[in-house]
Length: 144
Length: 117
Ligand SMILES: Nc1ncnc2c1ncn2[C@@H]1O[C@H](COP(=O)(O)OP(=O)(O)OP(=O)(O)O)[C@@H](O)[C@H]1O
Ligand SMILES: [Mg+2]
Image (cartoon, rainbow over all chains, first blue to last red; front, side, top):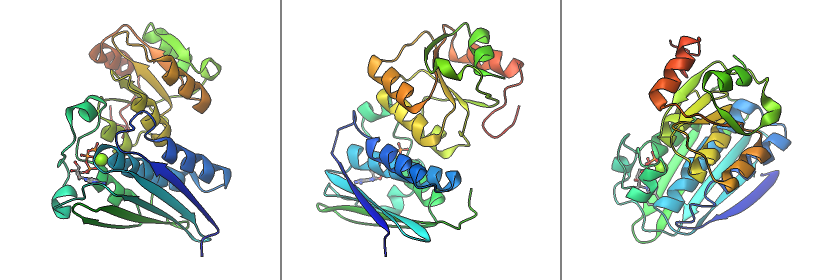
């Protein structure tokens, strides 16, 4: 059971506001007194996921659930979907456009970095329908 | 080293975060790739970059970067300066190139993100 649940909307190509949802989540966790090491991992995963929705996905949302022993992040979008998930998860693979490369994205490191930082990670996607990424963080985790 | 010394060393201008001149900063990373910052040990580092897009400051907030130095005299927009002030992240602009900025900091004992020299 979630003690607290919050939802933030994300919009395709709204790069000017991209990242605001994850910064709000970071500030929320800080206000709740969550350990800094965990906040940093949640914020990084939220931000990488949020940027992916803006850059590659469609319109979507990021939902954060704070439970007594864990934090869950669900990032969903109704974009074009990912045809080959193992390929998308490969370090260095990216379909980012020139515009996002100029902003410093497109290294193909986002999904691997999310998997590394989360205690649990699951992704599913249907081409033409959208993508869901679900990540869990244990509040007792020793991971740095 | 404290922020004030870093500014002097880089002949820099402080654009945001004047109240943090005594902040202790001991490691640095130089990159124009957001993933280097998000995947690295960038907590409380000095980030040297040539990128002045709004995503540079957002990435820095998310990763917990200690200060941003814009190289080659680049200056960010007022919007970015405002976001930096709100989030307590000092912004510096230096006339030096990325290479020279790194050299100056390294020569004075600043380490890489992983503590290497
Ligand atoms: N929400 C999504 N919808 C559609 N495609 C996606 C989505 N997320 C990721 N992808 C695809 O997976 C690829 C790899 O994503 P990943 O986040 O690892 O790298 P990137 O976003 O391209 O670059 P970086 O994250 O390093 O800036 C993307 O280039 C894109 O093709
Ligand atoms: Mg990405």
